[in-house]
Length: 66
Image 1 (cartoon, rainbow, N blue to C red):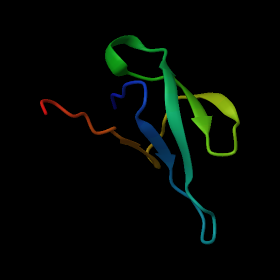
Image 2: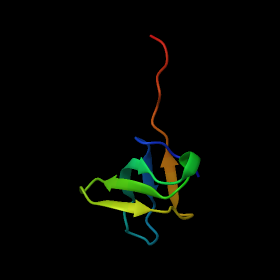
Image 3: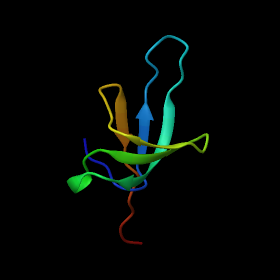
Image 4: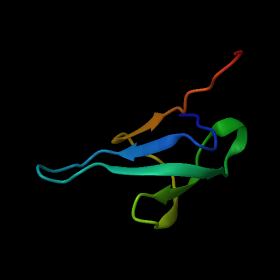
């Protein structure tokens, strides 16, 4: 799993009724985009995460050219 600053980290709910937790990666602490990541979640909480199998990285879109 590799990420860059600005990507989203999504922790999927593990039980029925539990919502996904979405945050923005604000710092990559591992080498070459690997975990752990410092993440700022939608509620303003920040934490250091080492994502598990219930987590996905949504890469921010990059634009090139005009």
